[in-house]
Amino acid sequence: MKKQLLLFVVMMLPLTASADAVEINGIWYNLVGKAKIAEVTRNPNVDSGAECYTGDIAIPAKVTYESIEYNVTSIGDNAFYVGYPGRTNLKSVELPNSITNIGSSAFSHNKGLTSIIIPNSVTNIGSNAFYNCSGLISLTLSNNITSIESGTFYGCSGLTTIDIPNGVTSIDSQAFYNCSGLTSINIPNSITTMDGVYIFSGCSSLISIRLPNNLSEIGGYAFMNCIKLISIDIPNSVTSIKRSAFDGCSNLKFVTIGSGIEDIKKNSFANCDELADVYCFAQSVPTTVSDAFENSYVNFVNLHVPAASVSTYGSSAPWSDFGTKVAITSEDITIGDLGIGTFCGSNPLDLSGTEDVKTYVVSSYESATGQVTLTRTYYIPPFTGVVVKGNKGVHTIPAGVGQPVFPNMMKGVTTNTALNKVNGDYTNYVLANKGGNLGFYAVSDGSTLGAGKAYLPLPTADLPSAAREFTLIFDDGETTEIMKVASQEKASQGYYDLQGRRVANPTSGLYIVNGKKVIIK
Image (cartoon, rainbow, N blue to C red; front, side, top):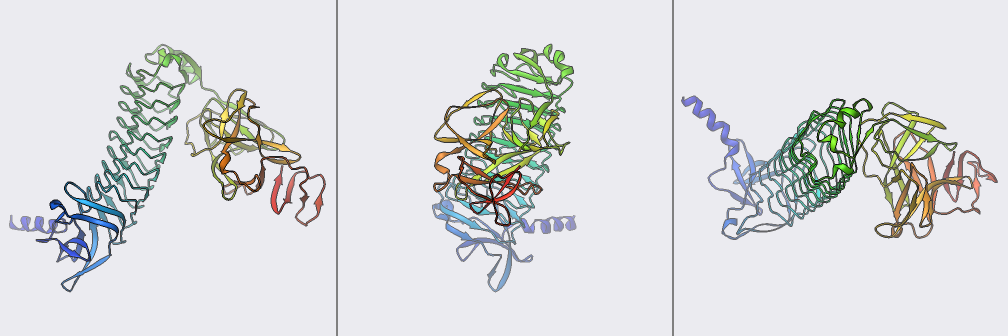
């Protein structure tokens, strides 16, 4: 019995502090003498109204106290926590590579904290670690954490994007609850569990989500009240969508549900009153409660299902309440003589099985350099504009669920559409070949774009002021062409071959125009 008790005491050593916390160069520590390790701890005077920590803090890898050197290995529970009557003016924290653990509520309520880099030495971040750090705008996570605990970033409304490391396998309840500034999030394929509740609930600026292919279920209230979310692609691996997962996503228009779905719970898509199209690839009708689409006006929504299952869905509630039942079909992408064009379809398309057609989204535009970057995607969500490349002809692309690439600045149309300035002053560009010069050209307000095509709207204020020209870069590692993109045709431009000779009537090939490389197909 004595041996067992002694073992318990030894095991608890790293978790306990010495009799009193000590202050070393303005930072408080708990010291463990035998192990010679130090844990950053809370200022013991905070509860009597003292200021906790202030300004920019740099935590050292080692500290010396009474001639003994200690390795700083952890940030203790509540170490930088601000609670009444404590005060703080903490702005940033620099963590050493010796830190392996960040305790629960370690930085909770530090509204002035603007940036933090969590080094790769950290393997664990406790629950509520950055709870209500509403001023946090810059965050780099350790690549060696395996989970994001409950409430870790609850109320971090200043974060606009976050990169979840590939090693993370689970996200717990309320991890990103009320991160109202978050616009997009990429959930890596390492995530297998997301069954906590309210994980992204209240992320009112969230526009796009990329869900992993290994996910088995979407937890209750996971994306509740994400009011700017327009579309969602649920992979084939997901078998269950829990209660109110997308409840209150009032701008959600397009939902694609993979073939593995087995059940959809109460209010999963309730109060999605802008819902227009739902694509469900399950051959057998998933078990679905009657109010899964409560107040989403499904009698006006198009339901797309496998052709062999249209009648089965049509006789099964609540799917039978949908307005129009449509068979999911493949679509044809037509590529002309130039070998490049734009496309927009009404079915989700899977291009992972073909190299005959390559599709790209416009992932970024740099106003300072005038550079447009195109990123390859192997999946086209419905009603999404893309650039297409391939051999001349008609290419039939099968329907399927995949991973969209975002952001995408391209816009698509499925009917003949007048291009007008919307939500501010934009200049609309369409892909065209003018005078042998292939590129995106500005079109006047009200110009008509044909059905099944796409265009690129750019804020007029962000266009280069000196010359409305910019380059189009494909970043897939295979396509290395550099194309010139012009806002207007310049008939007086001179084309030169790579030997410096002027070419009066350039055909396909690589040329120099105004000192820039231009490829004509």
